[in-house]
Length: 212
Image 1 (cartoon, one colour):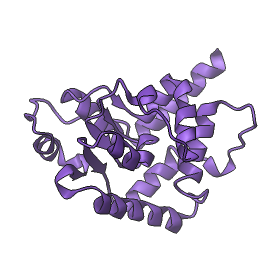
Image 2 (cartoon, helix red, strand yellow):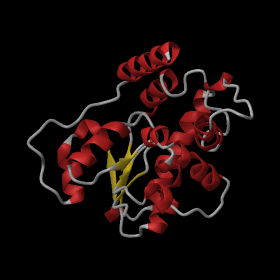
Image 3 (tube, helix red, strand yellow):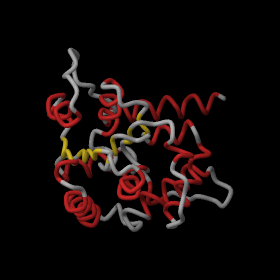
Image 4 (cartoon, one colour):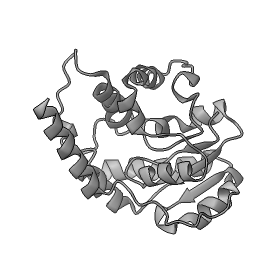
């Protein structure tokens, strides 16, 4: 059962949040990387994007928390499914968020060509994020920033204040643990998936694929 719903866009510290939640006992946490591990989940997310009723337990039934896309795009529906869950909105300076996303997960997205028989995972990513969230206009900086700001304000308006934490991962353990009602660990807050780490991982994956 999902106890914590992550509503923040990718590149707002969502992978650090995933690691933190799992360290605090709210794992496993569903992050975009889970879709790559379970590509059959992509069809469920695509169906949700089309507005169809889906059985969320088919993808989230074994998870206690979510962070990042694609789950963040459906935080309202997840709140209906798990009405007692708490919501965490990871956020950061909008300009820095855009540059980070542009340099990493969105790199080259405007020129993606996805043939009809392409892997369902990149197709889901395009449909849910780049077309569904950003209207196919992520490369338009002002449009993407407006979508980001609108999302933040929308979460604030829709989620009751006593169930919402607006969280910058640079704040560390204290606000997160206070919100979740758990002790602060005697360990550094996880700092993971920087733009540099993301680029290195993609390069390693590309190299491995070229050798296989």
